[in-house]
Length: 68
Image (cartoon, rainbow, N blue to C red; front, side, top):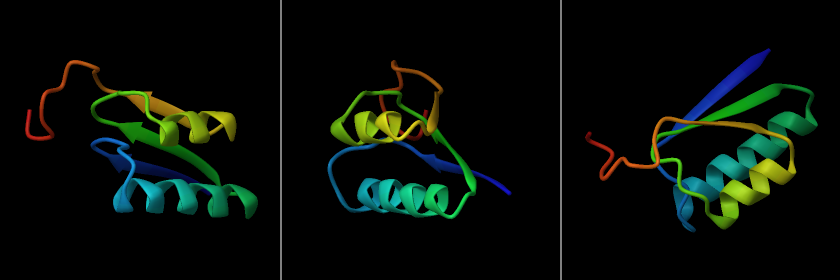
């Protein structure tokens, strides 16, 4: 099974923490997980996912808001 999670950004906070924790759990269960990050900005959560070898696809580092 493959799962693509989509999130607008990965600030230190609730939604981003949930995505990171869920990604870890799914990967531990042998499920292939990838992340689509709308704004593409590096954060500690971004680095944590990268360390876990979870593929992160970024749309743009120039997105000003999630509505663009």
